Length: 229
Image (cartoon, rainbow, N blue to C red; front, side, top):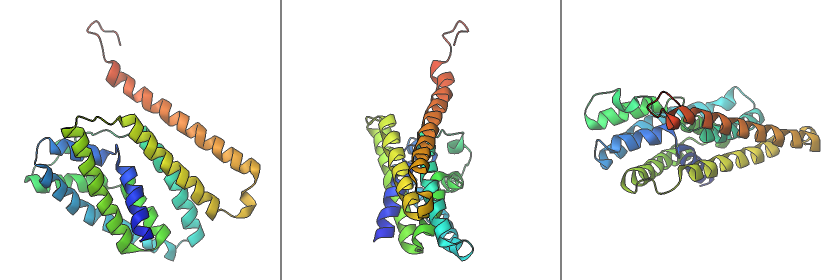
């Protein structure tokens, strides 16, 4: 059960505020929620099957310890990605099929290269277990997107987005650091190296937060009608 539970928890956190969750919320304003979730399920089953197969075979070419180090480092990157946030760029208007196929096709392509797909690859490489990771990440996507639809569309986003982002991001960073501590050779685990690593992570978090705020200024500030920002 460990691969399933771990995969479920990590992808639920990764999906919070993610582009694909925003996409599901956008579709829920146009189509019935059941249709949206059915499309999400179909797209995720196919997309994440490809991801877990890829992740499971990585160790055939790369040493297991190197895979564990890369997977742990990727969790820190996913945390930074979560803090940065995502925005829709017309994905909810790009495809025109029946409601189910519109959601499924748009969601499948939006998930390609997304952090939840990359997290699935990393989890499959870490646990070397296709079915539990596949089922865990797929279930997580459904739960997270159902939560997003409920909170965003029905409840009017009463839970602060900033709180959700920071909670998810810090969990990712924490588990990434723990994973690196377990996987790295003891020769690297000196006090100066550990201190420098924490400092680098802290600086990266501050840079990502600053960059995220700069991205929001043009959107939130806008103009006052007199040509002033």
